[in-house]
Amino acid sequence: MKEQNIEYQEFFKELTNHERNGVKIKVDGLPASPMQVVSAHLVQEESTYMRDYVVDDDGNLSELCFQHVKIEK
Image 1 (cartoon, one colour):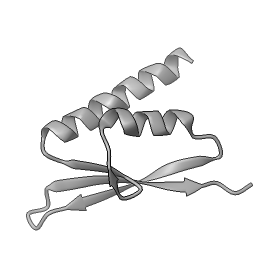
Image 2: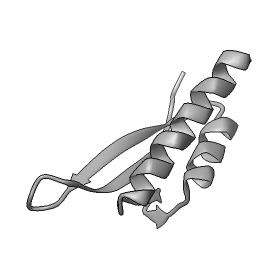
Image 3: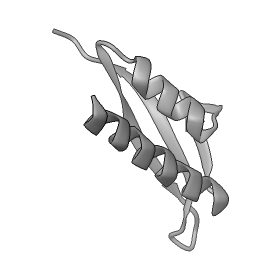
């Protein structure tokens, strides 16, 4: 469990850095804060989130989108 907490702390730091650099963050098409994204990952059970990177014309990251994906057994 301690290892997982460290993983989520690092994930939060990564998202916060992106947000500070002007990268828009979305979950299922809606604007989201780094904490909302981490919380969504924490409560997932039989699902996961796929990252989608959106870049501008200069090749810079402009949006980081997370799409909910249900895992079938």
